[in-house]
Image (cartoon, rainbow, N blue to C red):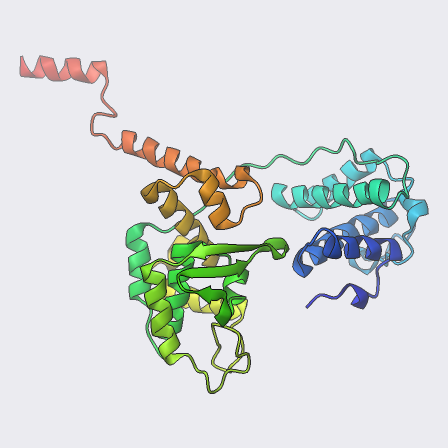
Length: 334
């Protein structure tokens, strides 16, 4: 797991910011590391752009340990836009990646200005985040869900079936599923820990309860090294993210869905879509079920419904009819 103190090429001012993110803002180690990577790239760009390193120095070899508040006080908004232009043209970053880098820089400089009081003026206060096209999430149809579940077989079928059923019925994230402990299940309620260590309770329907009961009959208690973990690997450890991803990739192939570009995360989208379209779930309820921080994130599922309605109208056999075609038919009949 990522450890801030283990970073060898990281100035103290950046370390303090990363600690703030993890301890005060409650960001996960993975998210904190992503902030570090984005800000490190910006620091390297600053040194390269200002001629603070020799021209033949490879970008990824530029050290940032000497970047302090004296340099950061001189950062301008134009320089930040130059950086975003660099990652677009030289690194080929897509809009979502550039948006993430912009967000990291805004958070960092806001921290320096408001929290650490090291800057009098925030140079990125007026920074605009690159616009990005909203994409509708991919999801499995009801028939494809049944097709996928029917393909699960082998020595670990009960475990993998249970995992898939939980994904498709509860809409939980991969990390949330991996983190489930035995004592997180209380009757028909499942406790999950989401982003920022936020807990929420999820109702377990009959399909989930039946799948869990069948799995517990064959759960390898005798070899389990992590007795708390619900899902155990063949080595007796808590099952890993990579193991689940590899297994699901195998089942997508076995079910004939490999070419559709589905992934574990698409199962979460599928659960949300099925609940919204077939269950008539209110968006605010769906937001709580999925553990979204903002309702705007959940609202994308309304676009899916709108798209399906549009397809329904277009599928009408009269959707391509025109007045000229009607006149032509009348003349032929007459």
